[in-house]
Image 1 (tube, rainbow, N blue to C red):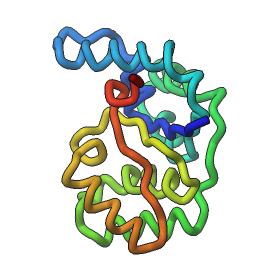
Image 2 (tube, helix red, strand yellow; image 1 turned 90 degrees about the vertical axis):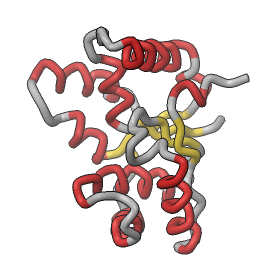
Image 3 (cartoon, rainbow, N blue to C red; image 1 turned 180 degrees about the horizontal axis):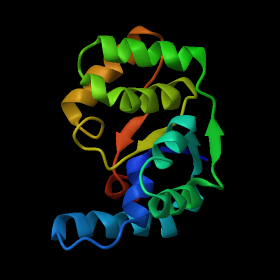
Image 4 (cartoon, rainbow, N blue to C red; image 1 turned 180 degrees about the vertical axis):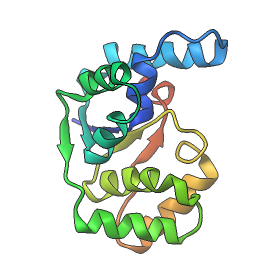
Length: 156
């Protein structure tokens, strides 16, 4: 079975109130569709980085996000993942405030996850940035997972 690492933007879209913005509402709908129809076809993982991010904000939202990830296995944030996070950040392709995005990629990469599922198209599901991050991963002997949105992981 293929594996998926779900980052915090995924569960945030899953539990958010329906948006009045049609584009965002469509993303929310496809996120829900992936969760209900496709999730069982994958081994799904998170990490402590996801738990930490999901635990930030108001109490109602924290509870909703944590309930989504509660049953998922958490991957270890190993020293190898921390080292790869620093290498990604040193490459300059992500701004300093996006260190957790680099950590998501690093954890999924060192654990040989097949896909990193995200709604973050600014830093992660961004073809130019992910290509440069993949080069850093390869230089360190790793294969980066395919970074994609739920729409891209809906199957044939």
